[in-house]
Image (cartoon, rainbow, N blue to C red; front, top):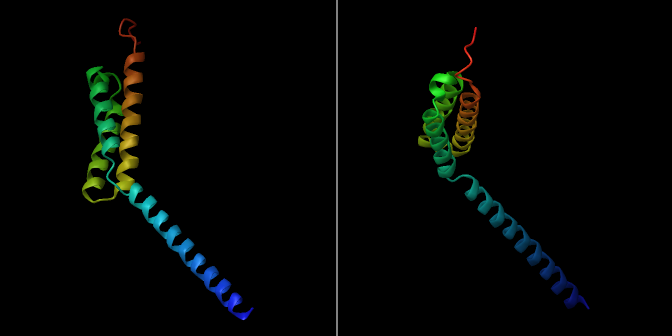
Length: 115
């Protein structure tokens, strides 16, 4: 009976240890995924800014375009500093502001003179 209790305690401790190791491996894997460079986000931001420029947003929605470019510049700086989470956030903001600029540029009625 005593040997059985010793074995059960041993198995329980080994199980706890393995669960902790597995948890650490999963967390490390998740952290590694999140800390990679935001390649796709940077590309999306650049493409959105290019499309907005082609639509004339620099003239029709200059504030949004300046903001988009500023966020993209910041994202590039953060990327070079390996601050990937902030670079990702700034790249997403750049894309969103470029989309805003595009929408604002497209909503301007050039045939309707403003007073």
